[in-house]
Length: 99
Image (tube, rainbow, N blue to C red; front, side, top):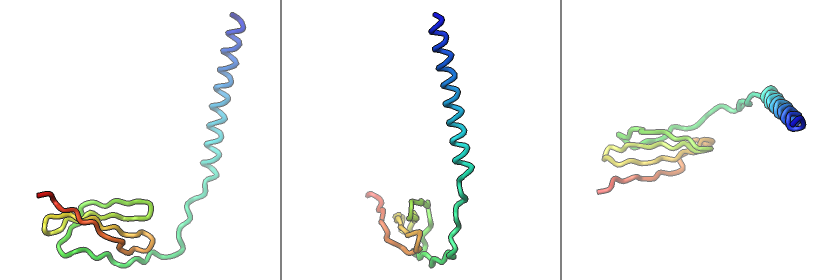
């Protein structure tokens, strides 16, 4: 019975030591993290042309794409895909209502 108590105490000490090591490692990595470097180039994207009477419904952002959901005046919807790096329109996906 005594050996079981010793084993439980040793495993408890190992658990606490492992947890403390984990906390120290995470704190060290957070402290060494460099702030994000800002781009030295100014943002210079041209205007995005929308169809006349269109309204932006929702906006989605991907890794390097901006997706605008447009509500068109005729009742249909359209997804416009824009490249974030250049600001140019890559394409559009029409979404027609089922009849």
